Image (tube, rainbow, N blue to C red; front, side, top):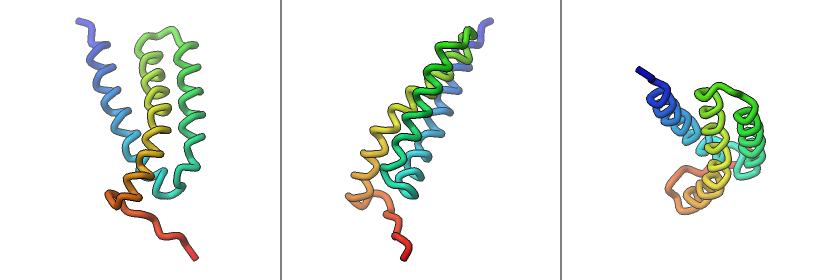
Length: 94
């Protein structure tokens, strides 16, 4: 049996689950100005996925890259959710 598809599916689910709190915490502590971190992660992992021949690792890096790029948009959406009061806003230190 070939478990590659199941492994990719489970790890994709985990990767997406990792990015959800990264976006929330990133916006909370740094605001939207941390978007470039997600951009750099996305570019690096996408380029790495093109350079790796192994299907499993290449696919997982591509998923990481796509999740990084998607998180840029989610970061700005998170800012709107905070403004609506759906998530707590961080008090600025004096």
